[in-house]
Image 1 (cartoon, rainbow, N blue to C red):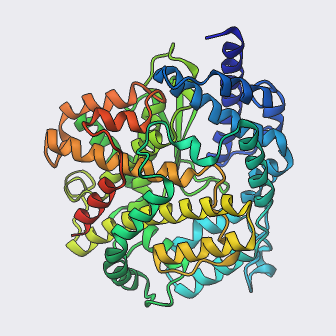
Image 2: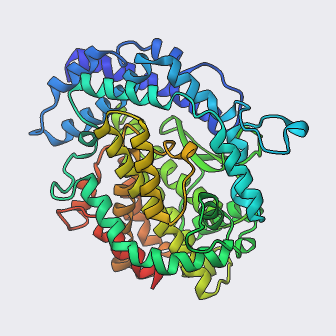
Image 3: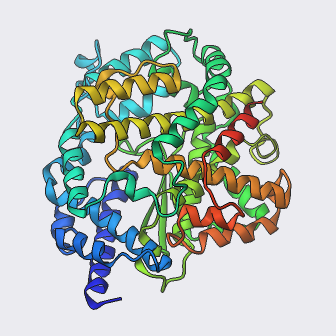
Length: 493
């Protein structure tokens, strides 16, 4: 690699480290120290238009390993460039979740405005439907921040790199099944089960009848179904460690922060502060299967970041195809809906309808990712976050879940970098991995120590392989969401 590229990758790794420190404080609910704009300003090489031009000229598909690493480096530099183009918008979006801006009707005299993050964390667990609706209306009425400005900055960075958002996610993926085709195939393949089983389960767990389902009903079903008490909040870490010990999986290198700080987001998130030696998970304990699945998923991603050797290239440690960490997270997170794992490890004795509710929750997750993929593509086609993009997002969410999405929340999941498409590809890869593990080690692969070898084979390379390369290693040349559709339908059957 040339001296110029070597300097660029060093600057990008240093910027990634600085941004990870900011991400960790946000994930852990700690007071902010620094800003995204200041971090990018301190690393002008990695966030420059020249860096994008240099990487564009250096890409050579004839050298697959080098091509994959440089693509990963370019994708990171693109995001840094977008922050450099509009640091104010990046800072406002960073601050928005903790800014008191949500005013709940009838509550202003007691508490005043509340941070959106706190309301979002509380909303799914409210048992009374009218209370959830009130919280959601308040969220929808709060300022949305500079989403449009951030989207425009991302588009400008993509234009400088002479690539579109879809181009960030190709790298050998099935050319006959692009983002729009895959999302449509996922929705079409699961329409029937979502419309029949999903609608019945939503009414059973939330009281919402067809035609009156709202976003908060979906969140309540996902986070706090009727059987949530089978998953006590204080047992999740013990459950995970009991399973890891039985599998002989060493989690010692991953630190878990479970302090319940007011500014901590719900669920769990992995942050690589200085991989592979310092990788952490921020976890907000909560009752229910979703919190357990979130912890398992964050550990899956953390193990991927902690797996490579210390002397691995910066791209393998920090960057990579976004579908791969999503797949690692989905592979372990999916254990929280495996009937055998739930009985043997989580000690949760659920009825068949409750098991199907967990399976249907996974269907909704995939459908929401597909809808967000199509909404993000439509926003790019329309040139930004217009009222037409908002209408498209609401219509797609309605198709995916049967629920109404408030206008004030419609654009929150529209992503200029097509992160939902990376998530959807990751879910598909995880489904294919799960099928391979079952074929090799039977249905209870998760308690067979021999299954550690292929898992370590995934984690030990970090961000080096692409999703398409991992798919080929499993014996199939053409990645497809059909594997995900088959997995979801089988679990719901």
